[in-house]
Amino acid sequence: MGRYSVPLAPRLADFASVAEGQRALDVGCGPGALTAELVRRLGPAAVSAVDPSEPFVAAARERHPGVSVRRAAAEELPFADRAFDVALAQLVVHFMAEPVVGLREMARVTREHGVVAACVWDHGGSGGPLSLFWEAARELDPDVEGESRRAGAREGHLAELLRAAGLRDVEEGALSVRVEHRTFEEWWEPFTLGVGTPGGYMAGLDATRLARLRELCREMLPAAPFALNARAWAARGLA
Ligand SMILES: C[S@@+](CC[C@H](N)C(=O)[O-])C[C@H]1O[C@@H](n2cnc3c(N)ncnc32)[C@H](O)[C@@H]1O
Image 1 (cartoon, protein in one colour):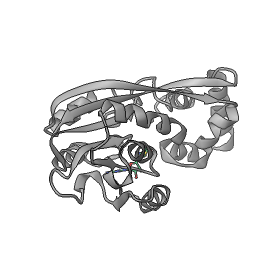
Image 2: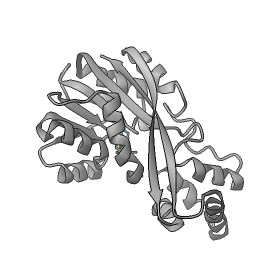
Image 3: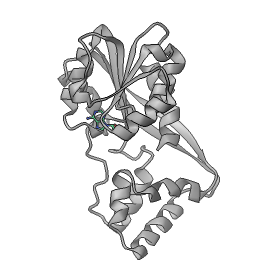
Image 4: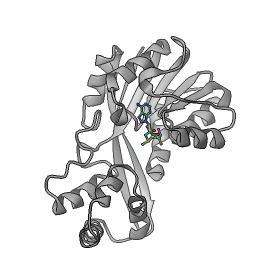
């Protein structure tokens, strides 16, 4: 979903007021969509990043020379108290085994009055980049859950989690991106790579149901070329 997370990164950085002179931590950096935006604003030496997945750590190191990238989960950050001015998690809280513990760790490593911010796609509503896929899947399997119940994926929940983690003056918002697709195949192709929750769902479908799912998606989308809006819920608070 890099084509959606890349334009989301400057929105989250703006929401967290990331500005020159700060030291920033990117939690759950993946290959580095948000890392790239932080490097643009702060320079590589001021950016640190962590991810629990070794392949993502390797990819982020290769793409962002000069950034300190370490293998770690949010729930156990390998940094001293108050080491950063701002700590961010883009599209990560819903993957954390213990979201409140992870956010509390982000607060611990952020200086007093520094910002902790996070965002998660609107998987709970109809505004996420995968919402149409799951709507089509529900036509096939009405009980399919998708990612709608994940932490932070419904309006207001991220703010609840930040407050539970002890952050102060918590505010919430919605971040929107618009992404262009030249053809239906270009939109569909990432779903065929077998990754993430959609990949897991598709692996359980036989060829006939898979073809039906593809057709349902095609029917639900506008004629190509088309542009889609995607919304992420966001929350920020002070450490
Ligand atoms: C959807 S990707 C988002 C990557 C990147 N932040 C972006 O916006 O493109 C989710 C990332 O969260 C990482 N992740 C999963 N569980 C985590 C945890 N407990 N703490 C930190 N990161 C985690 C995954 O390895 C993956 O890189």
